[in-house]
Length: 63
Image (cartoon, rainbow, N blue to C red; front, side, top):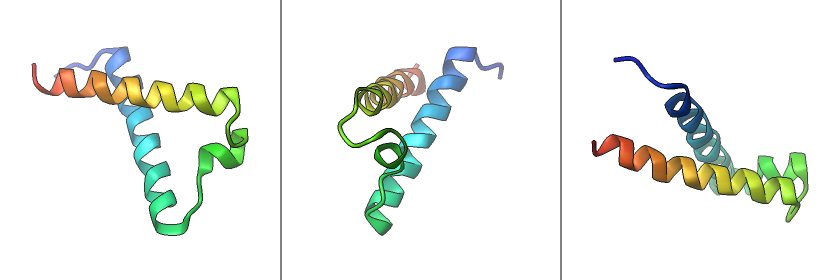
């Protein structure tokens, strides 16, 4: 199965989000906020992209 570039990007973003939330749950450490600053525009954009990627992945999964 050949994956499109968009699918690969979405998968990477979902994995980053999953790892980040795993670290938040296990250790209370948020990598995105630590790197880009809590509540910063960049952090908000990353969270938005991860959420959009998850929605894209859900639609791709059910096709």
